[in-house]
Each structure stands twice: as structure tokens, then as C-alpha cells.
Length: 545
Image (cartoon, rainbow, N blue to C red):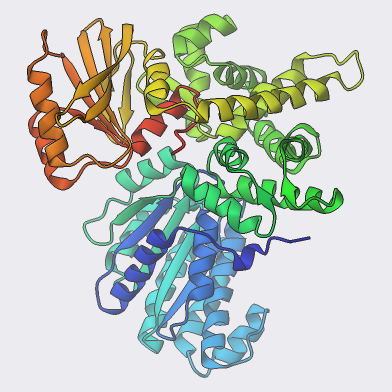
């Protein structure tokens, strides 16, 4: 039986790692660009940092990793000072002690000023002078650089938690230090994206030392399937089941890792060399349905953390309503018999917690698997009375089988059929896709058509009549080139009446000349990522190519 070795199976994210390594090189060359990695909890931000640290082999720089999740100020100070001296000891070939006093003793001869500063920091901590201690702590990288000519890379994991320390103006002080520290690179991460962006924009928007924001998103369908392939090496799994696994987990590497580990275990138990639907169903049941399943327990703790206090019950009700498809505040208020202001207040709590996201006037649970658990496990635990032993488990298995079958049926449909189903869901809402705002009409008449492009060639297209006129949506899996676009525009000129809105859907994108022409002609262009964003917002499986 295979066991997934996560330390040696880091997957993807080479673009982000490349940026981080480039920033470290730039620091050594006198150019400093701080970095913020922002993404949901299970997208692998910490794994990226750990990979960066494990691969780091540079005697001129030292990386200090500080985990701020549920940590107090004393821990922060101790970890900061110990890490600095510990990593210096390793670089210099000294015995790397675990105890701070022993570290100070072994390093004093080589870096006396740094050791003196470390001792002064801890003395201020012992005296309860937190503000002075914090300022002196942030000054350590400069003192260390003067003595050693070694630059420091400071990593603050979940940096927004600095505000939980009893330090006045904690980010203002950090910003002042960053402005003057040319030999210290800051890499920060946060799972609370709205909160983190606000801090970066309002308190750490600096003339010198500003932060480059890098989103850490879930993997797309292809990358998710590749990650599953890597974990399941030596075990066969059909393409459709693998794509379902990728879609079901929403591309979150943590969920893919855990589900693959369970599949490996079950294949060993049942002595199977190929994963079939019953084994996948059993794995999902073990992880999601069983109260002590890894993912079930993870989500349960997430909900309990959210629902502590007097507003707990209403918050769980809002989560359930969102999972059931109530996406607007007015719909939530009506469904839960709340005033609109009450519903909006609870939605804002979930937004701040980064559990949901807002797009236009619509609110969605960000995590696809969490949403599934809320709808088919959590809600039923709260409301169902299982009078018949095993009935809930049986219903859950049926739901999983139905989800897998529905996915496979949907995956077999061509692009025209998928887009037609998607267009039927538009309801005059305004949504943001890839940073651009779109007003999506409610369509009354949606008809697949063929566009003749000469020489016997055709484009698949859809003609859709809405409240703001007729739309023409042109579909192409392959790249759209300039000559394709020119032929399409010529064909469109012959149409009577002329379409009010034209959309190019190209799963492989447009070449540069076609992009310029599309912009000139005011055409909307949606690529695979943007179409799958719409699919996710409307609770549809991703496009499978």
C-alpha cells in the first residue's frame, strides 16, 4: 500500500515559488519587494513557505518563519529571537541549541551586539513593556545585518493576528520599520483575504517597502487531476472518476491529499488495484459523513468556531440557507424570517471570516466541499431524526452516487449544451469575473446555431434573446486567431437585426492580435477560467476538456 509522503510530494505552485526566490535574489542585489500570499485556509500557503525554506541554501540570507495562528505575544518574541540565533548557529556550523540562554551563550562571541539586543528585548518583555519590546524586536534584523552582512527574510504566517497582541498601533509601527529596513524582506500570509487587503491598503501602503499581493488559489481541474495522479501512482482510476474527485474537492490540495490517502487505504483493505465508484463513495463517506472523519471533524470545528456566542444559531442557519441556494440578502432574510438588516449583519460576519465571498449582490460559500458538507451532512444532523437505523448514511451514499453520476453525464455534454444550461440560469444579476463587471441578462429564448465561416467551416454559437436585446455567444475549444475573429465579425454584419451583445467563449484563449481586435470591437471574451468561475457561482460542475 502506498503512503503519501507530503514532504517529498510538493506539487505545483512553481510560479509563486519563482517569484519568492526572485524577491530573495533581489534583496541581496539591493532591490527589495515585500510579498503577501493571500488565499483560503486549505489552498497551501504554508506548504509553499515550507518548500521555500526547505530548498533555501544561501549563507547570505536567513529565513525566519513565525506562525502567528493562535499565538500570544510572548511566544512571538521567544520564537523570533530563538529562530534568529538558531539559524545563525546552523549557518556558522555551531551547535544549534534549543534553549535561548544557551543560544545566547554560544553566539555571543560572534554576534555580541545581536545577542545584547536579544537579551534587551526579552528583558523588556519580562518587565511588561510590550510596546518597547515590539519596537526593539523589529529592529533586530538591522542589528544582525550590520554585524553579519546576512539579510533576514521574515515570514509572518497569518500576519493579521499581529493585531491581537496588546501592542498599540501594531501595524503602524511595523510599517515604520519596513520603510527603513533595506536589508530585511517581509513575506506575509493570510487566510482572511478581505481583512488582509484592508490592512495592506490602509496601514501598510508604504512609499518604500510596499507589498506585492500574490493570490494563492485552488488548483484548476487539470492540475487537481494531476495531483491525484501523483498521489495514486500505481493505482488505476478512470478519467471521469478522477475528474469528479478534482471537481468535488474544489481544487483544494489539502482535500485532494486526504481523499487520496483514504482511497489508498481502502484499496489496501479490499485488495483492489483500481478505484471504482463504490470505493470512492466509501472514502467520501468515511471522511465527510462519519462524525469523526477527518474532513467532517475539520468542518465541524470550523462551524463551532464561527457559531460561538449568542449569534451562533442564526449564523449556522445562514450557512445552511446559502448552501441551499439563497444567495441574496433579501432571499436570506425572507427564508429565515429576519429583517434585511439582521441578515446583512450575519452575512458580514461570514464575509469577515472569509467563509463566503460577495460577487455583485450575490453571496457564495467559497469552499465547494465545505458547502457540500453543510448541505448534505451538517443540516441533516441538525434537523433530521434518524428513526430508522442507518437511514441517514444510506441517503448520504445515494447523494454521493448521484453527484458522481450527474457529473459524468454533464462531462459528456459538449460546450454548446453546457453553455446553454448556464445561460438559462442568468437572472439579470451583475457579477465580477476576472476583475471586470458584467451585467448578465435574463434570457427567454436560447437557441444553438451554426455560423458559416467559408470553405465549409462552421463555428458553434448560441443566440439568446434577453431583456436588453439579443446576444450572440460564439464557442470554441481551440485558440481563437485573428482570422477566426475577422470571419466571425463578417458573418455578424450580415445578421438582421445585429446582436446587441457579442461574447467569445474560447477555452484556449485568443492570440494577441485577436485580443486587440476583440477589444476594438467591444466584444466580451471569456476563457476557461472565467467560464468555470461562472459554473462555480451557479453551482455547476467545471468544464471538462
